[in-house]
Image: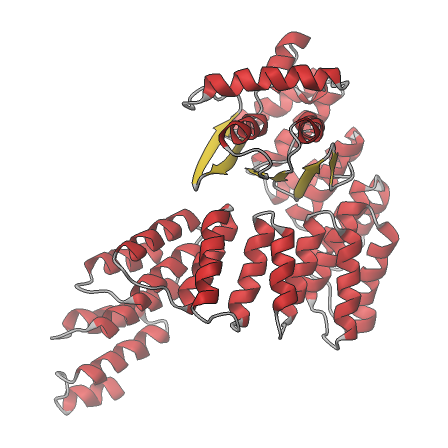
Length: 484
């Protein structure tokens, strides 16, 4: 009606009114009519373009938003920030960081919203160097009191494996939200600091801050990673009893993970069957993971029957089951599962690991010989191997789930992606510098044992972030205390 009135009164040339109408359509989700208004506007300014881009990002259409961004005759910080935020929101952190670099090249200074978006992108892919630089810029720009930035900094440092830095940000906050507390609790949890996570929770309660569902996910994860079964049960009961928080599917999944890791597989199964809500694939997947740790074929087959119905195209579950069969030397059953994967058109997710050296991210896959330092990497590994064997290292070839000779298994084992990433980090960084590695899958048992020894041999801290948690190797031991 307002649009019709503008047209009737002949205000089509009033850019402020036209922008207001455009914003009205776009913010109401009527992108089609917003496009019509945009296309028929006799003149446009930067507000016009930013309005369309912002609403396209909010609607999840990042491709159209980026195309429009490229067509803009001029751009301001808001234009760049909208697209950077959009890339982060749709799971494209690399593109977000690349675009931020271009924004810096044209001489624009990021605002507080830009800082939050870029820090979130750094958290997603572990770009610590850029995250530190943005943190320094934020402080110099007077953004230190921005709680949203502080919360994002905590999240970024945690996900980059810098727990101490996250704690410094947290401790320096004059005002904290439930997000601040929950993020710190979850960070301590995934870094194997269960007791510290629980202590922080009780400190939070003493301040009068009430926990939410996310807080309890962090607490349950802390209990799961360290095998605190009774504490986990108590926290799960406390949610409803003390805080009237109805457990979500994520909380049930955490409890199944807690019980399964501890080897209480029958209790985990009973817990699932008694759930008041329908268990999803993640819940049954947690039970399957416990079956692999404790080598329970019968329970694994039960979990897989449910997973086959709930998430039939997830290659990871089939791989876990095949590995359980292989570890039990049931080669025919393992082959049957792999054949089923081929029939479904499923391919095993390729394991990769990355390490950042001098601001550049280097990715490796198992057996990688494409890196320009491959010769040095393998030579250095052979040197490390001599020292490792002198300390009692024996290759754990049981993790190589192939029916081949032991010598060939060792060759495969020594070329795991995380080992290659570690050695490259060692030869490319100064002595004493912490090596930070990111792996897309769970770190294997042999690499875990190797990294403990290597951390002692080279006198360096090695931080590995895998699909589930962080492992901090130092002086021959790991923060997980071998419970993982």
